[in-house]
Amino acid sequence: MNIRLPKPLEKASKEYVKERGYKNVQELIHELLRERVLGDGRIAGEFSELEHEIVIALEVRPMTVGEISELTGKPKDYCMKLLKGMEKKGHVKELGKKDRRVLFSRA
Image (cartoon, rainbow, N blue to C red; front, side, top):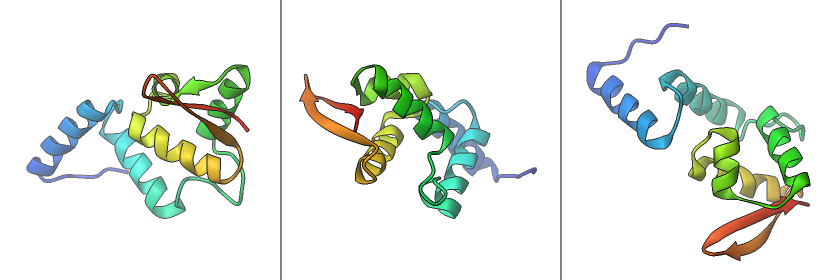
């Protein structure tokens, strides 16, 4: 698929990508479309590939949102939203805060 963006939107998108830690504009567009079209990216209770990666990592030890962000390459705000959704489904649990960082583990 080829998408042409007006110059101001293209420039703003590139800045947003750089600030938020995305690899490129395509990754941002992919994530936005998946969230908009599929909700949170899950299909009928199945784990997404990213959720599966997070659950496996949390089986080893509890991790902060920052550590999960580094592991997945996704922005912290995205990871927090994803973890909160996973927590509602009972896949992970928040252990509380440690040094102002939210800690999660496998449920």
